[in-house]
Image (cartoon, rainbow, N blue to C red; front, side, top):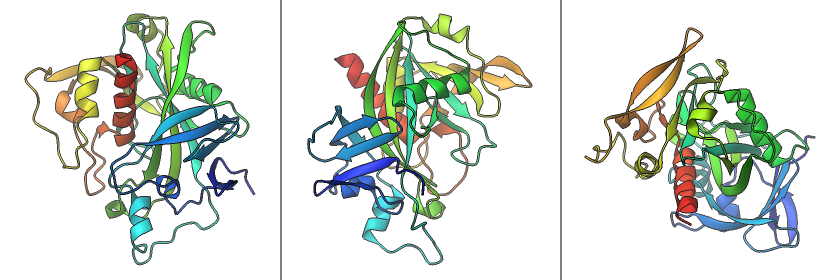
Length: 294
């Protein structure tokens, strides 16, 4: 049996997180919106989580899930007819890098339409943590694999930002969940400017179809846009009608005027594959802005 990736400290004993149960719920999340402060043991290839302090805990991070989390819904109601959730699988561990340039912008990438999971979503570079892999190493590896960026040691700093309970499909109305992750967001602050970093980006066309940089003002609008209603919110007069992204097309990277309304899209009730910023990314942007404020 594969080694458990996400462990929960319950009643004083670590146990693997089961696929069909909400991690937030098991750690005592109530009916509120969260996030919930969670004590973490950041290990190689593993994450140990607890609602209270424990020996060996290395961080206390906010843990969040979307308001429409299917696992929270399944805690309150039986699965839909015909839905079979895996009984022997655990919760997978992912890592995502919020890369900040020296001039305080952050990198997002758009996942290609052909990916089986979360296609056409704007997210930070990230992916699975390999067995025994250090969490920072996993994030830097994913950054390199998706964007071609390698950050020289000694030219960046980093800090864990927070944890996101992720499901795909993201809503029960899309169908029963097939994937269940806890994603650790890492803030990696480069000493290089956006221009210097962008000059070295070489997107992986099998995973990335476009990329962009967000400054604090636009990031704040995007982070506030997942309010439980469908469709884009009205644009503030202070926001530009579009932002400049770089799109990979026929092997070349070309500028793209991306409508601001696309970045403000919320998660639809039905599986439509709309281009939007993922809900977890909006949570990570809120944490990034709080870190900037400190």
